[in-house]
Image (cartoon, rainbow, N blue to C red; front, side):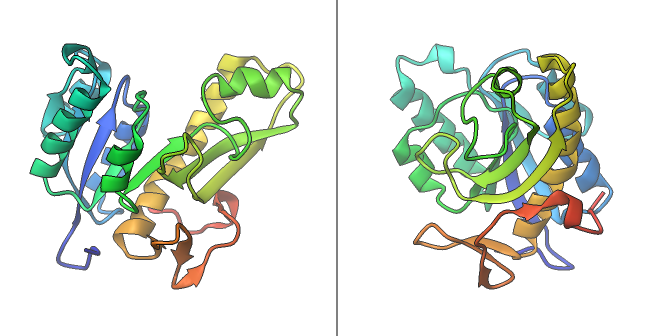
Amino acid sequence: MTATATTRLPIVILISGRGSNLEAIIRCAQRGGLGVDIRAVISNRPGVPGLAVAAAAGIPAEVIDHAAYADRAAFERALRVRIDTFRPDLVVLAGFMRLLTAGFVAHYHGRMLNVHPSLLPALPGLETHRRAIEGGLREHGASVHFVTAEVDGGPVVLQARLPVAADDTPDALAARVLVLEHRMYPLAIQWFASGRIFLDESGHILFDGKRLTQPRELAREKPLPC
């Protein structure tokens, strides 16, 4: 399904924490810039600030606590059932801090996006800002990618970059990268909702009907949706 002038793409957003990207997506959606219907926000951790962000926006906010299940398989079964209750055409990971199995990811093939705080394929995994500084990188940033079974290894749709300052700390660098994430993630979601991006069965991104050979760059994309 693709959003049109009269329909909005149904999406579900998964979180684990404060929900800053969630808040940026909600704000953009409320301004009419995304063409999406956020049907639910689901957290794998109870009591996190992102749940309050969703509730304040009138969006159903639910918890499926991974700690309440005997193993990963049981948790993912419960999560999948609950997600599918809302019948989303896109699942958005917004600070969702759980590794997902290949079977779970395959169920949402081409229908799951994530934002990662590095210029993938560089620095997959955690503590990217510290690793960027300790590695002497001159440039850092963030990437929006389709989710595949390989952690942070899915095809990259969009990237945003910035220079690493000589006196940067991990916290300072993280704060600047987060500003980029808040601008780029709504844009990538808008592209999906409008049918501009599509992941084919061979795992390649089509952008406006043509194979995307390099990620798009945020600095070259105008206008932004919000």
